[in-house]
Structure formats: C-alpha cells, structure tokens
Image 1: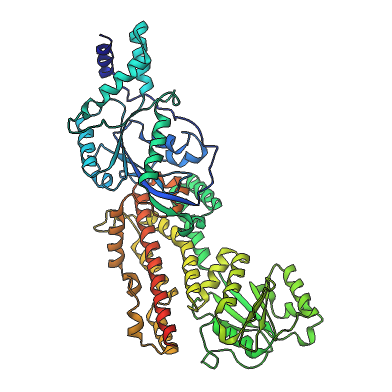
Image 2: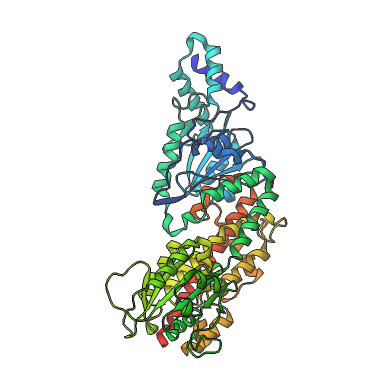
Amino acid sequence: MRQQMIMETFHELTLTETKFHPLDDESGHEDPPPEDCWDFSVAVAGGPGVGKTVLIQSLLGFSENGQDSRAAFLHPNKPGGPLLYLHPSHPGLTFWELPLDDGPPEKWISEADLLLLVTDTQFTQAHVDLAHSALIQAKKLCLVRTKVDCDLHTLKRRMREDYSRVEVLSALRSVIQQPFNDSARKEALPLFLISGYEPSKLDAPALKAKVEETSRELGRALCLAQQGYEVIGYEEIAELQSALERGGISEMVRFIQSSLDSLLDTRFDLALMGGNPGFRHSVLNALRGLKDGEDGSAHGGNPENPIEYASLKYPKASLWDLPGMESLESQPKKYLESVHVSRYDVTLLFLTPWQEASSSYQSLVHELKKEGKKSVFIQDCDDHEVPPGPREDQVFVLSPVKLPGPEFHRFLGYLEKKLPSHKLRAFMLSLPNLSAEVIEKKKEALSQEVWKVALLSSLVASVPVPGVGIACDLTLLTARLDTYRQELGLDADSLANLSHKSGVPVPKLMLEIQSPAGKGVTRELVQKMLGSATGIGLEVAGVFLHRFPLLGPLATGGIAFHASYLVLSRCLEAMAEDAQRVLSRAQAHV
C-alpha cells in the first residue's frame, strides 16, 4: 500500500518550475593547478529546465551567484549548440551541457567519455534511446534525477505518519530506473538523486566522486608543462571578464584585438658596444643570420654614431652597433645620452679576451640600471674554445666559431628570465634558426598569441564556414598560420637562403617538410582542418581552457574557439617539427 502511494504520488509530481539551488558553495576556494592531469569529457544531457546548468555549476564547485560563475549566467550570443564548462582545479576535465529539445545530440555523445542523463521527472523513451546509443558505443553512463527534495517534501506531506525516508528513496530509485530495466543488462545503471536543500544527505557528493573517479580511470594523460598552462595570466582573464560584462561581446573583441595588436607591434632593440669590433660584428652578423663579409653585414671599426641593422626575420627588431666611449669614458651618463640609450631594451657590453670589466664599464652598468635597462657582458674567447667552469650570471663567454653553442643558449636563458614576455617574444622571433633550441623558443613565443587569435576568430565571424557549421574568421586564421610558417623559416625565401648557406638544394630541404601547413597555407586547407577539429568534438583544446568559465555561455562560439585553437596550436607544433628537420638536414651537410 505504502509502495503504491509513493509510486502514484511520484507520477503526479510536476516540478518544472521548482528552482534548483546549488549543492554547495566552494567558490571561495581555488586549488592550485596540478603538475599533471587528465583529458576527460563529460556530456550532461537533458531537456530544458531540468537543472543541467546548476548541476554542472555544483560539480565545478561554483555557487549560482558566485564570482567565478558570473559568466555562466550571461545570455549566449549565439543560440543552440552545446555549452562548454571547464573544471577550476582539473584543467583537462571538461563538462558540456547538451540540449535534448532539438533531438538527441548523438554527435556530441559519441565523443564524450561519460554521459550524465538528467531529468527532473520521469525518464522518457527519448532518454532510453539515447542511453542505449551511448552504451552501444561503450560510453560510461550515469542517470541523474534532480529536484528530489521536492518529491520528498510532497510525499512527507501526503504520507504523514507513514512516511519513511529510507523507504521513499528506495521506491523513488525503483520508479526512476523502471524505463531502463533491461534483462540483457546484468547491472542497473548507476542512479544519483540530487537535492537542492540536502546535498550532503543525498547523492551529490557521490556523483562528484564518480565523475572524478571515472575521469582518472579512463582519462588521457595531459601534462601542463607541455601545454603552455601559464600562457594566459589571471590578470588577463579578469580583464576579459570585465570587458565582457562592461560592453558584451563587442567590447571583448575590442580588448582582444588591442591586446593582440600590442603583442604583434612590440619593438625590440639590442645594442652592442665595446670590445674587439671584429668580434662584436661577428656576433651581430650571426644574430641576423649573416656571415662576415656578406652583403649587408656589419664590418669595419667602431662607428662614429649608432648604426642600425634591421633584423632580417622580424621587422620590428633592430641591432645597433654603438660607438666606443673614447673621450666620454669618464662620463658614462653623457655617453649614454649621446647614443640614445632610452631606445635599447638590452645592451651587450663586449670585453676582449679575459678582460675584466673596467670601472668605466661598471659605471656604465650602474647608469643603465638607473635607466631601467638590462645589460650583460659578452667576453671574446680568442682560442675558439669556451673554457669550462662556472661564471657570473651576467658574463657570457662566446667564440666566433662556436655560435650558437651552449654558452649562447645560456645567454638566451638569462634573457628569458629578465625580459618581459612580449619583449622576449620579439627578440626570439628576430633570430634566425640557429639551433633546435632557438626553434623551440620561437614556437613557445608564437604560442603566446594562439588563444587570442582563436578567441578573436570565433567572436568576430558571423558567417559559418561552409561544411563546418561554425563561424570562424578564415582570413585571420590563414594569415596567422602563414606568418608562423615564415617565422619558422619554412617559406621559399628562408629555404633559399638556408640552401645558399648550407649547400643543400632547396628540393632536398623541402623533403623534410611533412605537415600540410608547413608546405603552404590556403583558405581551403584551413577550412578542411577546422572540419577535422570540430569532429574531435569534446576533447580539450589546450590546458588553459579551464581558466575560461566565460566561454561556456558563448555557445557555438565556444566550439569555434575550440576548433580554431586546435588548428592553430597543432599546426604550430607540426611546423616547428618541420623546421627542426630542415635545420638538421642543413647542418648535416655543413
């Protein structure tokens, strides 16, 4: 009798207007990112109004009105499509909110690792069919019944003294699972009852544990150090969030465009002075990818005035050959004024073999520090052998025939620590492909902009890419990929120059280029790659995505960002590998 009352009462309940409160509030706590994590996608599917969004928020540890989840309650700029949510402490753990009102989302389910099937009443045949499809594809599946506190409240009021919480919950589980009773299945599908008011007494903690346990069991390894986790700073995230809230998508686009323009327009000026002019010019020429005596190379003695040598790789970088101090040796401040010290980001102070820095040099360094300028000592090694042993951090011993060499890479590492990221980027891109280490640092420098280009592409485009179904700025993506190709030395001019220096014919160098983008970038190729990227569906488009809760409500814009980021980052990685192989082939012939 009691069981029948429970079942009859349950079938009468209509709970679509009941507000579902978050399960708990952990928004004030932010775990530090782990060194290693996993890539795992959770699809949360259900009809409108069943509480999918708030369920995801609770699994992420966000409260409905918490600061971290403000963006999740903004109206999406494009209707339809899955919404993307990223876990705040597990960068590879991704949640996708999928609607059922436009038909079962088999495309996305097929690419999820775990499906949470959600309802706030009884599961229907549509749910059963979707579950069957997921199980056929060997997907993990959990049933989630939300707003159970309302059922309990109603049953307690109706049953009065006959009410037993344990029996009621047991009966509810039986009723809810009835549509999925299948004699072919040995075990019932796991069911989680979620209450807005009693999260610790029902199944919310168990559901959280189940998601994380399954993700650890089945997730793909994801290393933060390899994925550029620190590319996006928290300050930039806050500025993006502020721009979005201040002026919507248009303001956010203006902010990203301004930030990207600032990065791409960064100048870098390197000054070289003192020491043996011949050695100093050899270093200057090597940094421009020239040999001594080539057209355009530095030569001769000390100049009377600063001479600018533009980088041959990066139009906004220059190397400056400075005159000697001579009569102004005792007046370092006046000397620096005469050579316009304010324009230089770093000054290389050259010493002749085993020369100690003179008092005038020390005074010069002191004045440079007062001006907020960086300086290092470069010591000439006349016997062509760099002596072993430790040296001061700011002293680097170079041999003309050993460039680049370990000491040069130590010098690059020093600048990496001292320069702002945008200045370091400009310097690295100004260098020729001197070594495998330089190519790797170029790739890292270019990766700084990938998320901005991808986000800008997904936000500014209004027309879907043919055959892809998402809106991306094909012109922007094509132009940036072609720039990456040039920066990494895979364009025709760079290959011809390398062939001239190494003696390896261009066709043989081209054999080492294996990636499609490395061979040439076209709109058609980018369009094809975007289609492949969206087919990947629910994979995480890089570790830093979890820092973007604001992407969730961008709906299909989030998918477009995902696809654009994958295309840019994967092409950059592949072209860097191409550049490594091309350099190895050229060096093997020298």
